Length: 284
Image 1 (cartoon, rainbow, N blue to C red):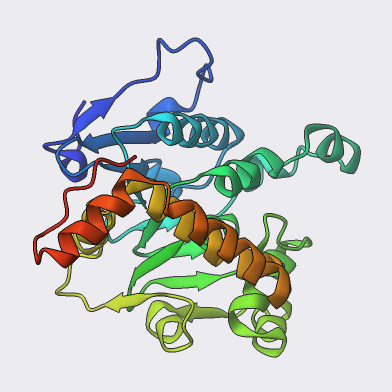
Image 2: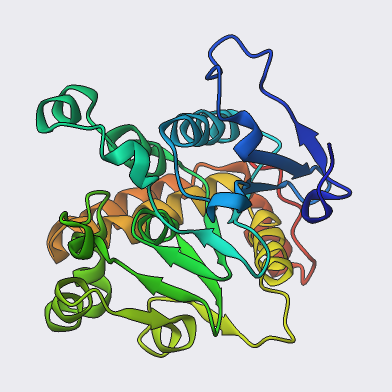
């Protein structure tokens, strides 16, 4: 079954893959533009506003792991339902079945967090409609967020008797500061894509006449045109700033910078610059 948003892409099915989850695949769809080296991953459970079931999360983890190993993919766009929902969060009917002990035993949400943290390539969230709770946290796990101005973001977990559990508290403090994060989380406020863009959390916000997913695809294609190992190293360096103090981050940056000198793409890029020609990167 094809979807308009994945039309023209190489649709992937992991149903026959040895390690693929046995369920959840129909709710996470994948298409690849081989010419642009861009993959589009779509959360597709529109009847439930893309609420994340355990099966969906397992399949999303599997998809990310597969795309990270695919040498023909150099950037990824993660989207939800057009004008509907990116994701309204974790499926509450499943959440109510968890006990504290079971959550520890299963490391609930740990696999999903780990899959994003391990993903070496740039991943862009294209957010339209709702991005609430776990849905907002999934967007925060991406490297870049493009959003509709009227998209609705929030971490409303306190209203159902719990707290954000997939990095929401930590990432929101880093992005917005302690006081705004406290206000949003403790009072379950929502915030628009436009305001988040003004605060620097969303990279760009788009009006109703714009196509957020198309713009995200364009950005992904632009990034994918550069050297894959260099882009991956640049991503590592930026993340080092988020996770370390300044001296440690500077050390990581310097090490990665020196490593680029051994790349064929460094030679190709610098030679092309000196000869006033466009570079032809070999991604090695």
